[in-house]
Length: 145
Image (spheres, rainbow, N blue to C red):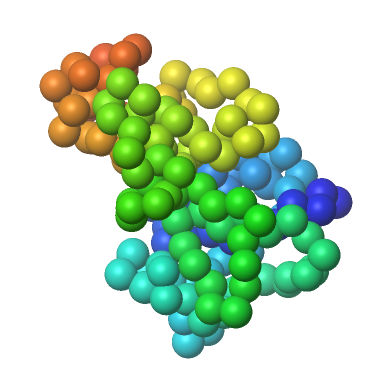
């Protein structure tokens, strides 16, 4: 078992793909929680616990969440000032997205679908306008449908 523990924020299509990849790579997964339930979007940065086992010697990677009392070794996010992907524009949609940050961290080359997921999550309006390099707006529409 890997010594990396990915603590995931609220579920959405991007987070589901992140979890799938992380588990496929043999890493541990836990979920940020509040009142013993996985956090929702409006609670992700105010989590008070984690659902799942935590080995405090694990390398902690927070993905779109914060957990009171725990310090992340790495943070993968793009929603708030100071997040690694916050200042990335549509031309850097992949590096800006959380899935892109996770895949880069793990040294995994993205699939076309993962690139679409990244653009859809990080900057959907710009992706629909064709401003994200390599993203076909029609393929994005089909995926979102």
